[in-house]
Image (cartoon, rainbow, N blue to C red; front, side, top):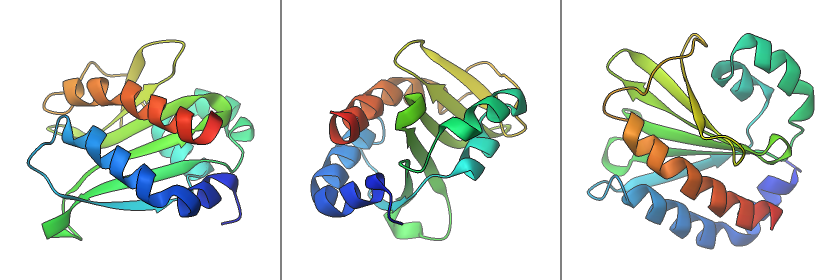
Length: 151
């Protein structure tokens, strides 16, 4: 874990954790989260992006990526609420979580609004229960990560 994103996490972890938790609280105000940080890799892209985009993006993402998993504090091991990945080289943030039909992934870039994909990589409409929440959170997380990692 010698990548810049991991170094930044350890040097500013408290600030980043507070800001990330504050953003999550905008739509999940009653939930106490445990935030788990790790380096996002090509395998994260493979699960999120459709295969035709993955083949194009995989060589471009590099290693300076971040993944934060938000888990309910009282139910560690169960109910991953959602994960956020930041890929600075391709200027994208993804939010992943479960909805009534399975896993959904939101891909947000500053150049376009967003795209939704299911767990199999097929484009879907905004999913129930998490769709509006993730669409609200995505630009806020992107701005936060842009400030900490690019800015």
